[in-house]
Image (cartoon, rainbow over all chains, first blue to last red; front, side):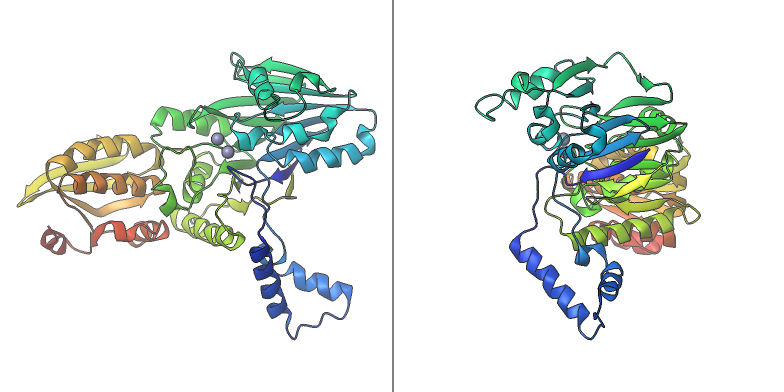
Length: 317
Length: 113
Ligand SMILES: [Zn+2]
Ligand SMILES: [Zn+2]
C-alpha cells in the first residue's frame, strides 16, 4: 500500500499568512548566514537539514489521504486536499482513460467533504466514484453542499459516475481478494467513523475526528483488538494536552492521548493528524517533542515512531 | 477496593479522607476512576497517596484534573503526594502541574488543607 497525505489540517483550510511566510524567510536567511551555498547541491543539503517548519510547511488543506493498493485507489475524506489530489490523478497516464476511486468519508463535517466539488475527475464521465458510508443518507448529505445556494453545479449533474454504498450493516467491506476495509464508530459530535484498511495482511488505520474521552474498558478493548499491530495509525491529535482540557467534548483528542491509543493498540507508527488551524508549524514540532518525551517516559522500551502529518508525506506499507 | 488494576484503601485523617492508591492508572480506567472520586470530592477534602502508583497515562491526568474541578466547585481540596519521577514527569508534560496541589510527603499534604 502507498499512503499519501494531501490535507492534514483540521476544521478549516489554513493558508500560510503573508506575515508567517515572512517569518519563515527571515529565519531561513538568518540561518544561512556564513553557510556555503555556492552550488545547488549545497543549497539542497542546507535545506534538507533544517526542520520542516523552517524549510517548508505542514500545510493548510483539510483532510484527504490516498491509499493505493495494487490497482485499487482509495480516498479517505475529501477535504480541500482532494483538489491537489484530483489534479495529480488527472495528469497520470494510468488514468487517461478514466478510473474508479473508492471513497470512505469519516463523516460529513465541512472539512471532510468540501474538496469534493473541486476534485477534477468528477467533471469527466470516464471516472467513477464509489462512496462508502455507514450514514444511510450520505447521498443527500453530499448533494446538500452542492445545492444552488452554495455551489453552481449540483451533485446529480456532475458528469462522473457515482455510486453510494451504505455499509451500516456491514462491518467488513471486501474491495478485492486481498483488500478489506473495516469501520468503527468514534466519539464525535454527530458521529464519525474510523477505517482500517488491510492489504496482504498489513493494515493501516485512519481515525480522525475521534475523541477518546469517557472511554470505558469495552470500547478500548474493541478498538485495541481491531487496530492491533497496525503498521500505521493516523489519529486525531488536534490539541495540546492543556488546550484539550478546555475543549472536552468538542470531538477531538490531544497529541498525548494519541500516544496512549497507539501504545494500547500496539501500532508501529503514529501519525499526528487533523492539526489545529491556530497552530503554527513551530508549535506542531514543539508538540511532537512533547509527545516523544511522553512516550519515552511512559513506555521507555517502545519502538513506536511518531510522525506529524504534512502534505506530501508518503508511507509504503 | 480494586478498580481495574488499581487498589484503593481509604481512611479518615482530620479534615480529609486519604486514599492510598497502589498499582497502575491506565487509559481504560478513566471513567471508573473519575466516577469513583467525583462523589468523594463533592463530600470532603481528598488526599491521594501516590507512593505506590507505578504508572499513570495521560487519561489519569485528565481524570485528576476533573476531580480537582469538582472539589473546587464544592469548596473542597484535592492534594496529591508521593509521585514517583515518571508520574511527575507525565503531569509536567501535560503542562497541567499548576492545576493541582502536589506535595512530596503526607505531612506537607495535610498542611495544604
Ligand atoms: Zn474535522
Ligand atoms: Zn468533525
